Length: 382
Ligand code: ADP
Ligand code: CIR
Image 1 (cartoon, rainbow, N blue to C red):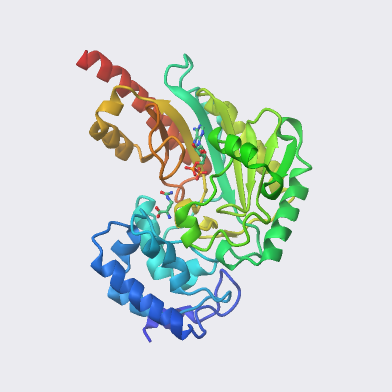
Image 2: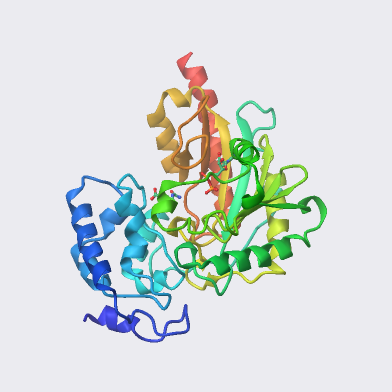
């Protein structure tokens, strides 16, 4: 056993217990060997494939978290779905520690060089007044949304949650949401009581999560569906909380148009009110802990739905600006969807290694630049 592994069998700061020790079942070892071979022989590009080399694999395949999670639980989604961009999830918070030599490299790669020696800054929501409306004339930005994710302290993530955990998390969260004040006041709609028509309408209107995501499905994130899942929605449909979808909690603020200060300040106020009533899992190094490593740290994804008729014809230029400003471009229905009617979902890509304010500012500055290039492109090409 290497010194790195020995190190892990010590007391763990993240879970206050002894991490890494345990017996990985025989059938899981077999599954893992097959998975590694499958990844090796596939011409795929996921971050999992890039960073799971033979040394890392050998170092991690016998380890197990206190919740009984193995390397197989982490990589299953990326093995079943060879088109994954990332390909890995943490079945519980301790997995980030036990399987750190793999997670750390993937985190560094996705989040623009956040190293294993780096530390997430303390939460800082900054000065909302320094942000501007991204599109005051309403020519490009269809809508603006800012979301963050949270995990409740004391519960594993989806794959290791029991039916009772889903019910308990839902109860704790909805009790806290009932206390919200002002324009955050709303109603909780359990998914189990929702008609298929209402569910479809809420999803099409970009308010509710989509059901049956194949990456989450393969990560064992959909157990006992729809138990414990639901959406809290305010009267104006501008504030919502998703319960027990990818994370225990997703807090979301959105509006039509480009009024980012309004959308962001609503989110900040919501998080402040909710944090008074719920304890969320946070690590000193990784910040707020989430199921997917792409969401660690601030967990902030600030996005616009934006029309870019000119840049849309020159996707190379669009990708260049996106890279330069650390933006991610998604389809109109969210991750892994197509662009419809020329409307792109553009958001900050990295979420760790910067403050909440800085994450939102990356989207702010990047989108202002995209609009500028869209306007210049028109002038130059016409
Ligand atoms: P997330 O991980 O942020 O929840 P998804 O990509 O799964 O993101 O998107 C969830 C839903 O939110 C989808 O319906 C997507 O279209 C919608 N959405 C994201 N950004 C915006 C936006 N700026 N305006 C309107 N809807 C949005
Ligand atoms: C994938 O690997 O493609 C899915 N598991 C989704 C990863 C999250 N995507 C992202 O870029 N934020």
